[in-house]
Amino acid sequence: MTITETGDRQSFTSKQVSAIFVSLLLTMLMASLDQTIVSTAMPTIVGELHGIEHQAWMITAYLLAVTIGMPVYGRLGDLIGRKNLFVAAIAIFLIGSVLCALAANMTQLIFFRGLQGLGGGGLMILSQAIIADVVPARDRGRYMGVFGAVFGLSSVGGPLLGGFFTDHLDWRWCFWVNLPLGLIALVVAIVSLKLPKGEQSKPRLDYVGTVLMAVAVTCLILVTSWGGKDYAWSSPVILWLSVAFVVSAALFVFVETKVAEPIVPLKLFKDSVFTLSTVASVIVGFAMLGAAAFLPTFLQMVTGENATNSGLLMLPMMGGLLVTSIVSGQLISKTGRYKVYPIAGSIVAFAGMLLLATMTATTPVWQSGAYMFVLGAGIGLMMQVLVLVVQNAVPAKDVGTATSTNNFFREIGASIGTAVFGSIFVARLTDGLRDMPPELAAGGPAQVDANAITPQLVQSLPDDLREFFVNAYANALTPTFLYLAPLFLAALVVCLFIKERPLATETGQQQPAHV
Image (cartoon, rainbow, N blue to C red; front, side, top):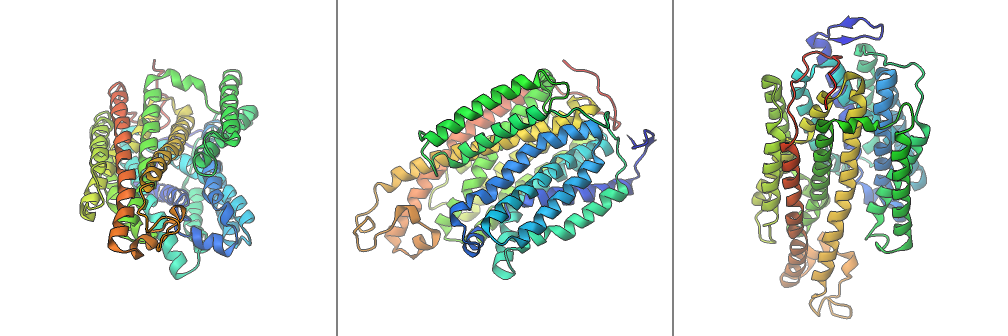
């Protein structure tokens, strides 16, 4: 049962809930796919549009827009209602997709990717918040579990689709594919969604806080994206961006304590369940994305597979995530108990990281796949369950804000995790390549530029030389998993302190204040 836009209570039939859920799934799929779909198409795109020096911005522009948009959509949804915002987010995303497909140069494509991301941030947040308007927390686990599975599958499906379109059609299909999915979601949303309008028809928006948040997030993502790659960590660019991040973040916190309608209400953090669940989500984002970002590199170097096929080798990790995410969601809906799953997930993910840290250049592919399955299974027990815990911990009027805040900090954790993981990996690899055999060093008969190593190049070398590079990558990457493993022990400690509260049995139910 929920409250319609006229203020009357309305019960949704199972058929209506199914239609709405399909619309939400399609939008979640589109938004999450577009975070990764251009990765395998990137070389073709930058070559055709003559923009190789700007290729990193293809992903960064989308990530920035998504991350900045999340809290804005979450708070506005609570204040003015989610239906019109959801429809607008779908429209913005589709317009951005069409413009990306029609882009004539790299500058246009980067700008349109940012526009697409502004819609994508709304799709991911509002999908999770709308299901809270339609389905009670007691029954919501099974739906949140499927959301988690879709998010996990898109991490592999994006690169695979991007590679398929690039090889067999055209890279522009990476964006055209959103049109049929988006139009179906748009029609269902317009026809089926009858949601609360929210508390305010003319909300007092937190413009200053939004700008400060945008500046802080931009600086942080640029530092984590550029540091150690495009610029040295000690370079003036990175140092000034770091200073700007600290200053803008401090000012943001100050402003949020003064304005009437903060974009991220700090009062939420007074609730221990919300705070601990959000901290656990940051850890999951940090460790999961840090590992997932570099596993394909390891697989390509060791197996000699191309980028698209290395994505297929990641399927076991996403399979583990899919299975446990769906099963845990079903069990939560059946029993009403949820605390055991993030605790178990922390232990399983910790074991998965330890197993990955044992991989060597000679580890069989099936064995690596089994290790990745274990890690994925652990993450599947945590990721969407923590969102459900957060939603259940706050009053119904703050569900959107709480959901967006949780996702916002998880994205921040993912950005930092990818940067930290990458820095450790690159540092270890650089050390390993210092022992390059004389015949590969500059001036040797088979000299190789250490900065231009590709899987194809490695596989073309004689066996003994190929073994050097394969071992260098394996020795650089796998110990890094050992450094990430303790994060899941930290998550375990955090999850042990989360208080389990009864799941709400009605939508729109005002939860009592918790301390």
